[in-house]
Image 1 (tube, rainbow, N blue to C red):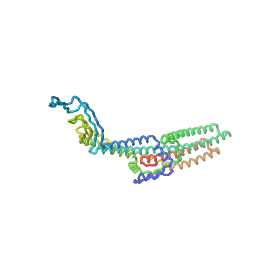
Image 2: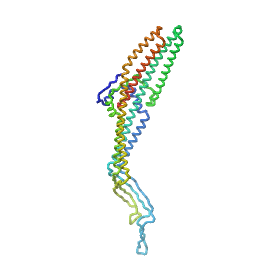
Image 3: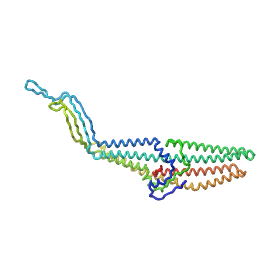
Length: 432
């Protein structure tokens, strides 16, 4: 396994770190496959579509509105005056027809609203950007989960291989013990003791196989693929910073920080919109069509049109605008404080990940020597046992010691890999 280079410099960029991350193609393929398979992303993509529609909807606020309008009203009685015609007859003159008809095309066009519509469009665009960034954030989270599953599978496979080796040694020793029992040099109890240890190791192997199957199930859940072409080695390597440099990488590149900044900007736009709540709005309106009721032939339908300007000035709304501004500013403050919470959280998590990296590196530097010693001790004990010098208990102890240090080495490699994956997630490194 490649040794991790611990960098003490502070000027490392995301691109520089990403270029040095070693990740095998099998893991990259699984991660990218999960982005298209995992149902959550289809939901997030639909959220992006909804926000795109919100942008289009907000943009329509500065477009004119055209309506076809028409109405019919029957009025009775109507104002009328009798006029004598000089021939002894009286004519009735109506000032309004009983049947009133009015129809045409109405246009209402916004002229000026102190930039409120522009801010609302910008707010909708900011919501769209948040939705897109949220997809990127969820990709980093899923990538880390898939990487964890992938290397957990490798860990369990290697642990099972150790168990197979242990069982193989025990079965060979059992055969020796059975031969000695047949010659009368051992007790039946010695054979049963070895068989009991074989059964115990078989049970441990079964537990590991059960855990492995559960990891395959998780892999199927995340990627749609139930098996991997895993390299059988812990080959994930990452150049890491010290605590402060890693935190700066996280602040610059982690999508959770990006989301926090974008939420601040969205809240600031909401506050700006709220401040315009008591501003007037100016619009033009016009209508062209036909109607009746014109003298002297009030029943005749004639073309008509009208043009005008509307001004709407808010005078009093019970302090609603003031309260909306105060609320929006409080939301801005809350989102700004969220950055401080993120700094605190990420400082803690980065310190823990780096501590895990360093401690497991130190353990791996010593465990190989322990393995060599345990192997030599087992070989000596087997030789002594074959020659009748060592006891069955000595052989079992030597075998167990080797098993423990081999599993410890795998465990340290596994923990080191998980710590590196977590550090990559925290610092926003893309390794897929």
